[in-house]
Length: 80
Image (tube, rainbow, N blue to C red):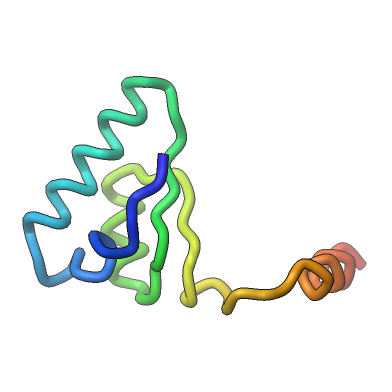
């Protein structure tokens, strides 16, 4: 299950977005689903999501979007 970037964007400033994100995480886990948060751009967002039990995250904090060919090259380079 994915947490939309519109909720992640304001996690640090909006208690309602944090509460909704936590509810999504709990609901997904009750259904035995993994959760990925989209649009994570700050350490603070990542930390809040980690504390809430989010399984995965994607966003500019980790990497800019890359085309498939470049992704393959990055993975090969990391494997060496």
